[in-house]
Length: 478
Image (cartoon, rainbow, N blue to C red; front, side, top):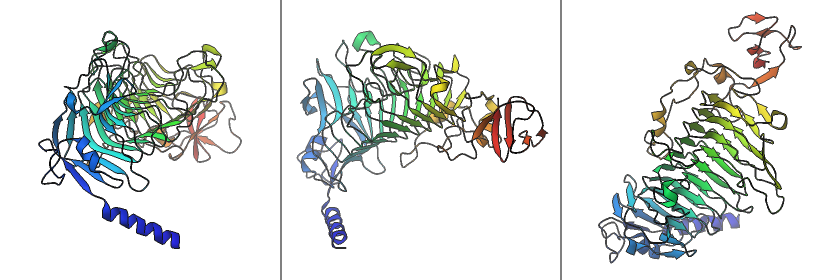
């Protein structure tokens, strides 16, 4: 009881002492930081902040110049905003757009010669970045390189990046290489293309990337969108700890715009892999989770295992119009850089519709758990009438006021669809759909527990292959 009382007093004390500092495009760093005397720069605001404090940025465009770059880190990164002051549990330091306003950080003029750009370089714990745009991030190096709008590279943890839009630049949206329990929530990365390095391939501009060490667990991307990024939408190559993509959307990866392809890879969700090469030693590959996600019209694969050295969990996803909607290719072993059909994966309650080349490829069905998908273990007929809408533009609609994904009917199953009754696709939580589809074998007497009926309720004594009702649940007769 005494401990609870102390914690309550401490929480009240932190709340009572927390302050708000204001920054505005027409502010002045000689000001007090009050709403009537706002500062001009994040650097000045950070000096005034302590755990529990908030820096509010007024709406408008902040035209960042090179003289505002706060430093150089790792010998190669020009860190525009070097966030090196930590909050603590229960008392984050917050950098946010003023409620009801939307600041835009324009990096077009920041072109440091011979350096990569990191706009928000997070070298702290317990931060919360929220409600602003980052545009125009540049690349100046012509060889192999990359810039990053938001970087977590120094082993920092417990940060939240929420409702941030990174667009119309040359940088990766959010890039994590070291750190645990970071949440990327309701963020967008779109129309990002590097036209400078490596002859303008655009091959290092993913929407979101996480490439962490074994100890860096608990990183999650939730409610994010990536479209028209010149490489991949979401990338987990060289990632040694499990990562989750939850309710995220990937569209037009490998495109400069909806009509112009780039030489980049162009996968929607690239979950794993280590470059298809012999590793120095054996290790247990992490098991990534991709659930309730949508992959639409990506140049290469919608959902892609990328030569991973183990299986992933692919649950209640929906894919349409990718080269292959689901490609589960694995590397044979840590010491054999040979492609083999995917092993160890769980594919459950996923929907595939009209892939450009194939619904799925490179899946070893004998070595994977495959249940209740529209394409495996038994293929179902998927047609436009199964969906409420096939208008992909709904995916790019404005977010809700709280930053969450817009309501969409895109590839939402109609209640009359057999796939809806089976609980497949992005709209159902894993394992919580109306019913799963089970498999039985076709023949004159396929079941021992009762009669079998068509979906229209007609009893069938010798069913052919298809979906039926048996014992109050749907079954696939194969």
